[in-house]
Image (cartoon, rainbow, N blue to C red):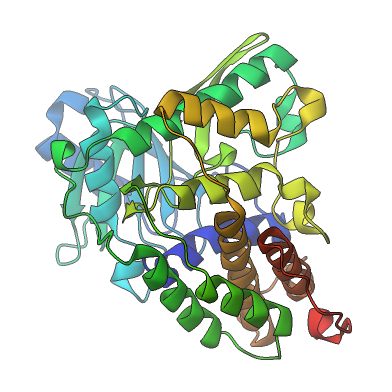
Amino acid sequence: MTAPRAEAAASASVTTAASDSAPDTNRLGANPPGLNVPGLQRWLAAAHPELVVAGQSLTATVIAGGRSNLTYAVDGATRPLIVRRPPLGHVLSSAHDMRREHRVISALATSPVPVPVAVDLVDDTEAGEVTGTLFFVMERSPGRVLSRPAHNAGFTPAALSGLSLDLARHLADLHSVDPRAVGLDDFGRPDGFLARQLTTWRRQLDASRSRETPELDRLQAALEADVPETVRTSIVHGDYRLDNALVVGAGDQAHVSAILDWEMATLGDPLVDVGMFAMYWEIADLPGALSAAVPSAVDTAAGYPGLDEMVAEYARHAGIAVPGLHWYRAFAAYKLAVILEGIHYRFQQGGTVGDGFDQMGGLVAPLARAGLASLGSAPQPTTTESETR
């Protein structure tokens, strides 16, 4: 998992929340940007005639997009479909690797981890008949994303509690999958994973420097000075959180139908997933205006369990003892801070426009201080200049 790929995927969720200008579903007509729907229909008829409904035309709807991979909901086939392709104007093929997502979803099809059903992976770069890029097709899993407190309406506290523990168990299931058994033994390089992550994220930060970031630099140094020993390796999702899952049900029934967004998956230390999950689970408690930039549906008053209960359920289901997560939570804060600094840099360069982006830079220092606090390192007092410049 490279930092550019992680930064691109994660920043998409932050920038969408910051601008808050795009609805959850954006209907753009018969040919939304980046997808030739008649071309898709011709390809489907030739490659997967079993999915074609005679006399029925396909329609496509953009349901996610931006700096991360573009996602289209496709209707009119025998089953609802999803098409995924790199973003418009993408520059690094490694940053938006369709093959990677398709491979991991296909590999996990027979595992206890709920994933969408993969249909096909297509290289359309030469023919240019559908997307002009590599793209993949999968069946559209039922359900909806819970990403804001308002999305909890219609579920009882018991349902939200059960859904949460379900999510913790699915993460334990993922980390229990034997990569070799599902053909993913060469999916990443687990040896030296944490040190390599720090190196790549340091490089990402250096590429986005437009000002002094003393708190973030101290956090980086503190993380590098005390890298924990990896005692387990597994498939790592890379961005595991509630709003990367589809939820079905209503009332007192709710469960996860599919885990989404596998573009950052690799082999590595599974506690990186747990630390990232922990940070996002308690994002509303972090300082500054982070809950506005990165909203979350998690609300203990609505019925969601506290983090301790979630980690305990993960440990129980995985059959392991989870060590202290201080380093991993600090690393999660560091990664998000680097992402926000990258957004701030692009905003300063005029590369990102919209409401809220001017506030991203002010969130970096508070988030870095939260990471230092997680490590037990007392951050030195600073002026607010580094937070707002």
